[in-house]
Image 1: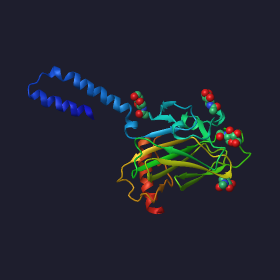
Image 2 (image 1 turned 90 degrees about the vertical axis):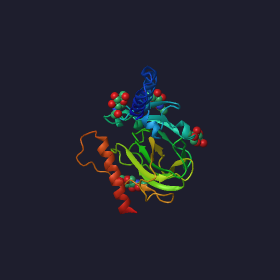
Image 3 (image 1 turned 120 degrees about the horizontal axis):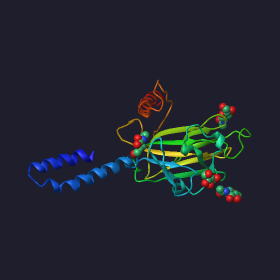
Image 4 (image 1 turned 180 degrees about the vertical axis):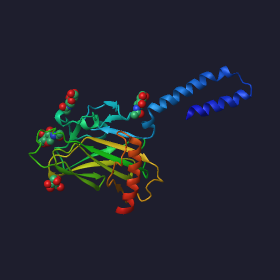
Length: 251
Ligand SMILES: *[C@@H]1O[C@H](CO)[C@@H](O)[C@H](O)[C@H]1NC(C)=O
Ligand SMILES: *[C@@H]1O[C@H](CO)[C@@H](O)[C@H](O)[C@H]1NC(C)=O
Ligand SMILES: *[C@@H]1O[C@H](CO)[C@@H](O)[C@H](O)[C@H]1NC(C)=O
Ligand SMILES: *[C@@H]1O[C@H](CO)[C@@H](O)[C@H](O)[C@H]1NC(C)=O
């Protein structure tokens, strides 16, 4: 976006008969800046993607989406890191689901999500990922269920009892009531809570007018209506449509 602007500027100045050689280094700098901006575009949008359970300080770019993921160590002090067992990993590599952080101690363990993008009063989509993957070797020997809370409010119950469930994903659209967001895992006496990933996506305030600081929206369902395999754009549009439908029907 910077580039056309810079070229227009250069043309305008050339008409004033300025030496065009003077502008080339500047144009080049703009071109490089805009190329750099493209590769970091998801960060610039305020995306924050946290891979729970990887080594502290580690980060990587997901090769499918080009979205960068960071370790969760900066967002929480409690819990233990684990790897899922290889046989329970999917055919398509999904690094965010391969590691997790489990909370054997304490009834309530909370992530404090602070980032440049989290501003009190602004709207966010928060996504939480869960893949049990038999990380503790206790598959089938217990039922496993716990609660997910956003701050002090109940978000959803997470039940991962079905062993063939590849993963679970929960989504909420909410307004930050402080300069951070608190994602809490609550032990309800039915196994050790865990989490694989947390993704934060800032939303424009004009989206989802039904959401305010007292009311959040949960994703009800998402259907894939004949999309080509891997067509993320249409899936996203469908998500937005369905979120607005679920807003209409469930609030
Ligand atoms: C990811 O980035 C690479 C290099 O910049 C690019 O070739 C590729 O098309 C991008 N993939 C997606 C899904 O955007
Ligand atoms: C998970 O696997 C990676 C790579 O094999 C290893 O470096 C790491 O120590 C493992 N983490 C845990 C908690 O076992
Ligand atoms: C959990 O509590 C036990 C007993 O107090 C302690 O030995 C263990 O290190 C704690 N684990 C974590 C991850 O805090
Ligand atoms: C979790 O799901 C299983 C299988 O559907 C069910 O039997 C169990 O009661 C559920 N547990 C909770 C706590 O909801």
